[in-house]
Length: 157
Image 1 (cartoon, rainbow, N blue to C red):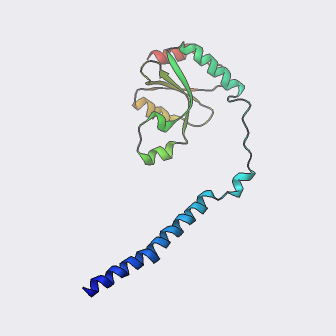
Image 2 (tube, rainbow, N blue to C red):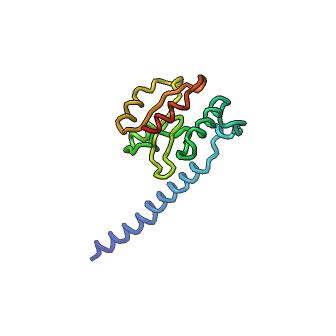
Image 3 (cartoon, rainbow, N blue to C red):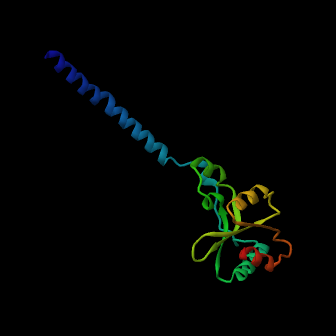
């Protein structure tokens, strides 16, 4: 009987003088870390871009919208992990990979065609990936003249 009383008091004092202060100190340290101002962030100034697109990209975008004639929506700079279902690891790896223009069906929201600026990088792995899922992939150089008929044919397929 006396042992259980002593153990009860020992447990009570342990919780009161060891566990509760430990939790309180950890809470205070977490608050200090969370609310501490980073000196690096204070000196960086953020400004708004005067234009979202450069002149060639904006002209290409406007002409692309006229080619699709309201049947498709044009999405710009879409992350690859928004187009494909990926596990968490692959999504983190491919989040930086962006698709220049994605044409989405206005009615079903299905991806119909992807247009990429061929001047940026080699797109052969992307071509294989999209052909595997029967999605058109067109490489175009925005700085050169492009053929609207070829896009209409790619959309028809």
